[in-house]
Length: 228
Image (cartoon, rainbow, N blue to C red; front, side, top):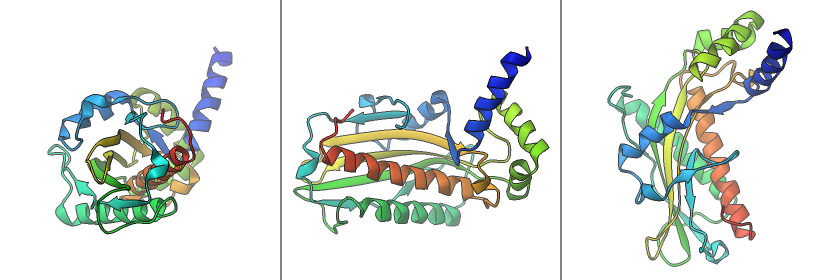
């Protein structure tokens, strides 16, 4: 039995070092009822390093685009886990700023939609807060950290962490054609970087991840990598 437990704990330790961890596909799939995406029927399960659900049009010439128009991020409130309007504004503003910073490293951010412009839309569909004091203890104190790791096996998430689910879409600025879509959900991990995370710290880390991943994929597609 010990031989079976040791590899398991080693794997858990590696996962626990992550800043954020993906949520189960069954949880993410629930967000498809939000009505945000133009055509969610196009979505397929992603692989490692991709959104949980995604679609990329294989026939698009990504290198033909010369700018990105970024729409304001919207918040679609979950009636079972409501977030007040002021905090919604804080979260959407944070995500918009992070997206703008990341995407501007790939193409200029432009003020108008049109020919040769990628239109990027994003929505936060379910954001939960962490518990700052207990979050810090669960990361810093070795015994609490181990207990949290073991308990996560049954729940799929760590205690006291925050999370975020969201949807994103890229369309052609001239025709409105859907170029890419994604739905994803992530929760805070047990990285020491998260020890001092505030109420929305884990959600911020998730939004950082999404923004950087979006910029990374657009850059890859523009370089000629297959749109898979």
